Length: 396
Image 1: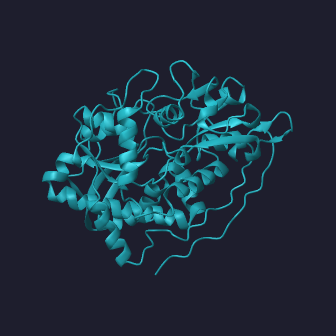
Image 2 (image 1 turned 180 degrees about the vertical axis):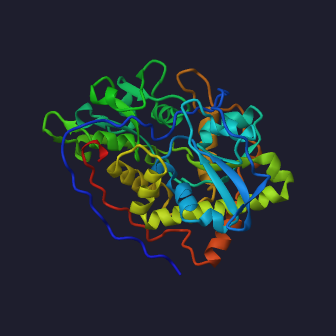
Image 3 (image 1 turned 120 degrees about the vertical axis):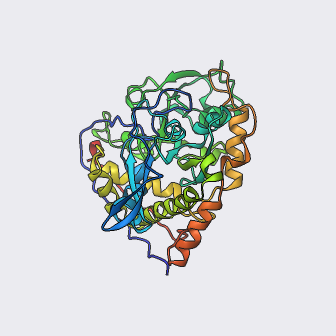
């Protein structure tokens, strides 16, 4: 049985302005900065819940509780993890948290992180594996106001170009270099804060913006020329998926050494992926409830912005090409190629050699998908239709 896809809904726009300050992509880098203090992992232990034995599992997020991670919070709240015998603790990240370091140190059993943020760590000796590529598409864009005349990467030449850095810059630099721009001399690179103030103030011609966060922040702000909210028609958007320089983002990472030697961890990985994907399927079909669950988990984002985020994240997952979580080789190869050959403003590439064969695996996600399909779950979302979310001022 295939779950029905939801009806379109609209939230009505209201008026005056503020910009949200939480970064959609997270602030962690792939460098060796110290992770935030973490409670020890308890994956190897068991506990009891409702009289039955459960496996204690810790998931380290890439950033704070928000719609970007809705599927995991939904899986916990709706009992999907418990159904698989898992007692999952979801740990939000702080500004100094490097999720893959937390995983590698044993303070988490799984971690969420972007692939390019992890490839450098793998080359440095960190033994981790992408076991489920949840986001199939990139959410990173470069946005500008229409009067700047920036409609393609080539138009960034001679402009003030915003970049967050911290491992979020690679798609931008790959796009500019693909367009023939000398990124050392033909742009003015602006260190962009994790908000849109510099862009709104005119200090940046083209700013980085995640579809599910910073882009919405602009649309939640009053245009002083009109007294009304900015509209999509006021903006030009460069989407790196369209430009061929998108890189794989949110994935579930596991400990590669344990996958190679620990049968119990292998089984737990399949169960964790299955329950997490069931959470994402539920999020697809119940976005408002998913947004409410994340809000209740401690997110500080306003309700309207939270629903926008869940809706936009759904677009990065659905429809799925090979089943949610499957690593598509073409997308992986594109990410690795950019990581090998694109230099940022420091003159460095992410990696200097191809990653090892165990940098990703579809073994566990394919087992999870087979089980979900046998239970009647729609793992493809071919008929997915996103909601129509019209933002209010400040994301209310």
